[in-house]
Image 1 (cartoon, rainbow, N blue to C red):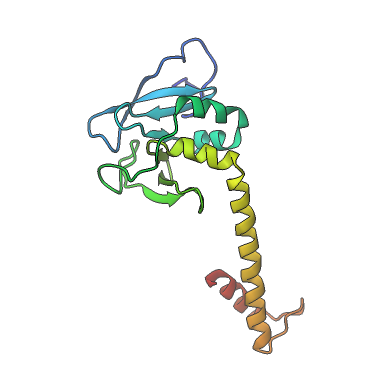
Image 2 (image 1 turned 180 degrees about the vertical axis):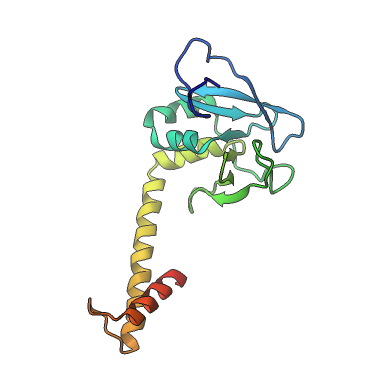
Length: 188
């Protein structure tokens, strides 16, 4: 890691071409050290045995948001079938050792990531490539639009419930009716 730069974001330079030992251990392969690979300006810690990758939140955000990195990810990580990982279902963060939460990347992406809220995300073999393919195919934007439409529908449903109870539905809504709408929107 270069002093003065946050973990996961690297600078260009002639000494950043070969993978180096990251100092972290693979959460899937006991005793196997992760290697640091640089994709342009993003650092990825990866396991040579299982093919998994550990990315900081900043590195994952950069990969998901930078079109120039998509091709580099495709070249670096060949497509492979998304299969259930070998070993434990719930793994520990390579940084802190806390159990990571399993989280669906996007509803239709079929990619389940392991996330440490503090240190980063673990992607098993094929998942990083599948994420980039999903985003580039427009799936990520379609998911956002579906989520926005779902929230609007939920709010309208809550307002219809309040209206059917005889409460005012206009801007003159009283504080109790507004609290009920907020509560129903939250739980629906």
